[in-house]
Length: 432
Image (cartoon, rainbow, N blue to C red):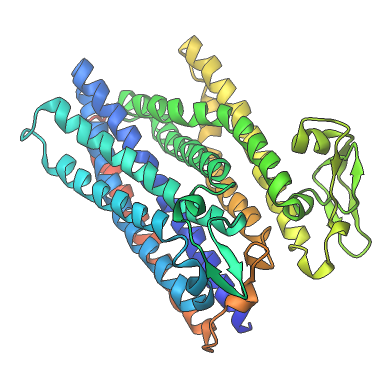
């Protein structure tokens, strides 16, 4: 493994780990707050137990997210010093705002954890809401910094140096809205289905049925709603990518030749050497519509770009297909959920399905980030700085990869163990 591959693998694994726990950490407070609200309105002790169980989970995941996020920030400087040299003065603002949101979230968590019976009940509830809002804002600021790497703005590039920096324009670049919208909805979608899957499994075991049914309904209220919103957010994101990163869109779709009425492929494997798609099901004109709302629009193919500037086509395409397939399936499950909710009866097979599809949302998030990051290659700052040019000259990156791999695997094990203990403890209070 060479230095570049080791550095990219370290960053990929670190981000892949962090994004899961960050997604949970910034959405679970809303579940907790919803349960708390229902307790304050209905005085049902099961809602109180749910609030306290999820509260402990939020505290655990906040700590894990803080550790993994801090490691990521160090990795930026350690692995990509030339990137930080240019990007630091430009995207410092969203990172500073993210830090502010993080500290606000930490304060709010402290108030919520230790404010029971010390504050007015609704003021105490509001601190829990602040945990969710600040965590959500923190996620948006981080994604805004990442979106700048895809659509750089707010500076001038003069003789290989950065000049005339406008941090506001940099933060609110052309990609920040669609990336933030797509990511935040995906987080609600993934976490909603995951939490619902856990409680569906516990519900099927026949213990504390009312507790777990209430938890399932709260989780799916967020997850199912987000799943129905996601296709629209994804369509908006695809159109923005088509406009600002046409090479990425072409790689996502395995689209090699420029043409009108471009076909969208379901499945298939791109044949890079022969510049064609194999085994996919072509839908004529669908890619043109996806990109420009016009079935006859022209879509640029990879042939428009120098071969050395193509993203890894096969990996980008397969990741995109996985993300879209999972998103479509979860939207269908969401419709089923609302149908059964109206009937006030959830069949056993449906509850079993919720459990078995528990990880799908997180797989979709990972696939989506592969599309975002791999689809930008070979650029670390799109059209300005290549990833290979930003790499540290220090050798031995393989050692760092192994070290961070071990760290994150340990963190993951401890986190799952702690969360399992909290669920078991809460369940025992309401076993029937």
